[in-house]
Image (cartoon, rainbow, N blue to C red; front, side):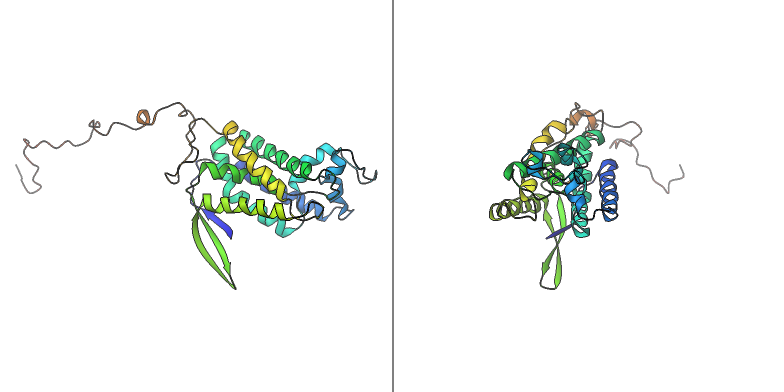
Length: 272
């Protein structure tokens, strides 16, 4: 199933989410003009065997230090569909996670999840000579955080049934839970020496996002709440009780009409 939209409102503009999307698009366009063709993946993609010192790249390919590829690889993509799929997930789920943390903390959170995802894949097969690229590991961290933040949000998905796309609204905990289970199953069934999808990066990123959420989220933001869509706590209200924010409904408000049964009722047709 393909997610299209969620019903979770956001209180702030997703500046970092949009910025990451723009950065990934710009990097992808740069890749298309790279003079070495696919050599760009070996120069800037994460190669576990090179990272751990078990292999060396030719001097004309090794243009940056191996540790730097942990960061450069998370902004690269192998094709248009790879880019479009990742950016779709980031656009749908990233804004609400950014809303729960704030812009700066969300950026650090995103990069940290990307690093955790990259290392999970690298340690799973340290001798691999296949370059790893893509933002899906970092985005997996965003999905893990969203899974805990808004489990009851409704996600509009389309499910291919033959030649027909069937739209459905499904709770986020089901959509993201199924996604994570699929990564676990696929990761366990895919031989480590084969290239393709970096399932263990997805798994590592998702788990890192669930853990790091508690480090980066604002105080007062609820976790695993099934009360329905809700906005993050506004700045300055993190330590304020709910009953301090909402006026007591039992007390009359200034300027409000109060009914008095002993008073003469107003008659719109009475001249006196």
